[in-house]
Amino acid sequence: MIAEMAGTRFENAAGHLFWMNLFMLSIDAQLELVRGLHPVYDFSLMHLFFSAMGGILGVFMYQVQLTEKRRWLSRAC
Image (cartoon, rainbow, N blue to C red):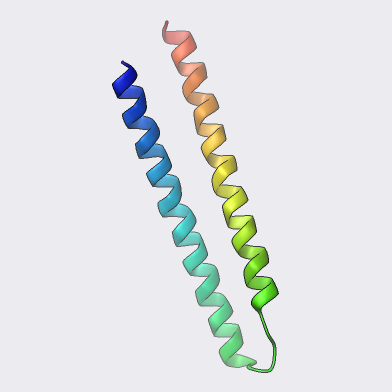
């Protein structure tokens, strides 16, 4: 059971990293599009902001899934 929990935690973390990276790639693509349309502006601060928000969102989603997993395990035992 402990190995099963460790496996699902690893899968959850890998899934969150995948979605977080996909989210960041979409933000990067949007910023590159805007930068191509308006090359005068510098979007480094905006990129930093969206990177931080993506990281916070990924950590929050991971914590929510861990909380749900703990609730499910407490009901099962």
